[in-house]
Each structure stands twice: as C-alpha cells, then as structure tokens.
Length: 119
Image 1 (tube, rainbow, N blue to C red):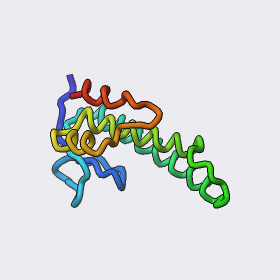
Image 2: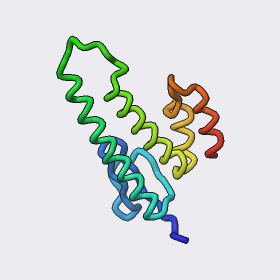
Image 3: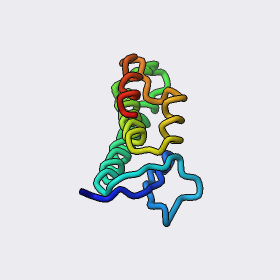
C-alpha cells in the first residue's frame, strides 16, 4: 500500500506541493498517496481545458446562455476537484467545503448527502 503524505493544494494555480516546498498561501491541506496527487493534478489539467472553452464562449457578449455546455463542464470539473479535496482533506478543508456549500449543485440537490458519506 502506498504511503500517504501531506500536500498543499492551491486552487488558484492548481499546484499540489509537498509540505517541504509549501506554497505561501495554500488553499487546502490534504493527506494523499502519490497516485491520488497525480489524479488531482489531472483534474486540474482538465479544469484548465474547460476554463479555456468558457473563454471562447465569452467572446460573444450578446449570448445570454449562462447554462451553456461550456460553463457546465467547467462547473463540473470544479466540483470534481473539490470532491477529491474533500475526500483527501484535513478537517479544516472538509469544514470549509461543507460550510460554503461548494459541492452543492442546482442540478443535484442531494449532493449534500454525498458529502456526509465521505466523512
């Protein structure tokens, strides 16, 4: 079994760094295996691609489609990242995500129950 180590996740940059090279202002602390860290990094890469697709859509200011497929993909990739952080995070990370309703979705109001199951 792979050993879990402490890592710091910066939501803004998508960095996942070990404790020894801690970022100045990490968003969350997680306890993860190297495989879980790699999975999280892939999620951030997918999120970056989804963010780029929303920029293309934003170039049409008269388009009022706020629930566009591009936006939905970006939102879903963010929920997946926060779900993984919730799963791997310390108590402070879990509390922040739960208290702010970050994983709640207007498309899936029962997602809140899923958060409770991860605890």
